[in-house]
Structure formats: structure tokens, C-alpha cells
Image 1 (cartoon, rainbow, N blue to C red):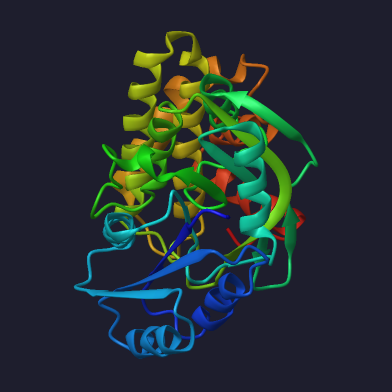
Image 2 (cartoon, helix red, strand yellow; image 1 turned 180 degrees about the horizontal axis):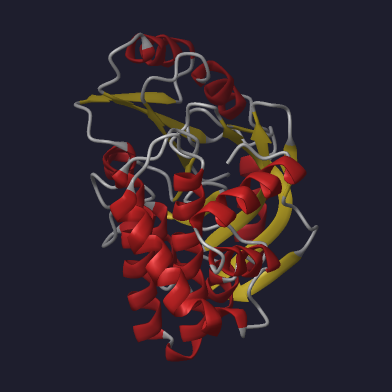
Length: 325
């Protein structure tokens, strides 16, 4: 008999998107699911919609709680999950109908602790970025972490993965912080024996015009650096020979944050100074690493000509790739 898989979906102010998300889970080819909808104190009709789905499908479990943010909602779902395996799906995203079956088949065949699929990035302007390569591998924890740090076909995000629930016995998502995935994903992977990689795009990651990624810059977006540095120190302590890879990931956090600041109509001189200073002081050693993606290297080189030039570079890059973030 198929084992129970718990799908945890945090819900907050997503009335426009949640039906598509929830129904994509309900229509999975893998049927033995526990669908946990965590209403994170949403002030609109999201909680009511969750309750309506619970009446339609006995697999749906609803948790109503005070607003605590994405991490807190995921933790609440983990606490009540009954499945041997769990997966996280963001409520404005959706999955293909073979999402769970693909991951479950891999994790069962390989006797692994985590199965990872690929995804499509879908922008509201219609641009679609396909991340799948068709690769099918079984990786060690160290190989998986290294590939995440260099952005080699494996995303750092909590979603698009199937985990043995027992991995979360001692791990929690950090409450009250943006970009929480950066702090915990590598720690979770470090607890595994091996990891299954199925580079098929069964997860659809939506970048909305009003998402955290694309909203105007605020100082809280510096949280990406905080989480990435926390992860970096953990990885360097456990795998000292991955120091170059962790340095690259920290640099990416600074470049990514600077790119969001560059898109802002407002000015944040203190944050700009911090970001530019780090990139200029550490950029040369990153440029020497042959594994660093070209995008990162071009970004580092652009900062050498000042913030204004970096803004021009980033806007040109966005137009060329069709990105909005």
C-alpha cells in the first residue's frame, strides 16, 4: 500500500491563486495524501475557502492560526503531519499531476531520504524559464550541497522536494525572517544518507508582480544575507573543503539583494554601502573560481564601475532574459 504523503501549504492573502494550487494537489495521480492547509491568520476569505475544501475532500486538514509568517506556518504543518514523507508547496504556485508520484517513486527506488525535482519559473508577463535538464542521479549529501551552493541544477528552496518527515525532528524553519529556506535547506540535506535528483519540471514556481521577490526593496530583504551566512558557516564547519562554494553562495546573496535594491525607486544609502563594500572587497577571489556562474561574474565586474553602472547592467540583463526580478 502506498504510504501517506503530507503536503503542507501555507495560506496567506492568496484568494486569487489558492484554488489552482490546492486543486493541483487534489488531482495528483498519487492518491494517498494528507493535504494540510495552514491558514496563517489571513484577513480575507482564505480561511473560509480552506474550510470549504475540507468539506469536499476528506484528505484536507485545515489549521487556523494567528499570523506568524511562512516559516511559522510550515512549522505548524510539520507538527501535525501524519505522513512518512512531507512536501511543501507555496500557495501561489501549483504542481503537475505527477508531482508526488515522481518524487515518491524516486525516493522509494533509491531508498533515499530526500527526492528533488526541477521546476519552471513562470513570470506574470508570460516569460517561462525551464530549469529541467533531464538528469536522473543519486547524490551524496555533500554533492547535493555543493551543487546547491553553485546553483548547478538544484534549487535552495524548500519546495519541489519530498522529505522523510523524521528529518524535521530537530529542525525548524526560522520564524520571522524572509528567505528562510537559505537557513535550513542545507542543514536538512546534511542529515541524509543520499538524495534522489529527478530533473523534470513537475513544480511551477510563479513570480507575481506583488511577490516578496518583486516588491519594492525594504531593509528586511537583507535577511537573505543573514540566512545565507548562517548556512555558510554551518556548511564550512561540516565540510571545510566547500569553503569556495559557500563563499560563492554568500556573494550571490549580496548580488541578489543589490539587484533588488537597484530596481527600487527609493534610495537606501546605508544598505547600498554595505552591499557594494562587501562585493568590492570579496569579488576578486570569487572571479577566480571557475565554478561560479557567468551571471555572478558579470555582476561583480559591473559593481567595479559603481552602483549606477550596476543598475544599468541589471536592467539590461532583465530585458534580455525577460525577467521581472
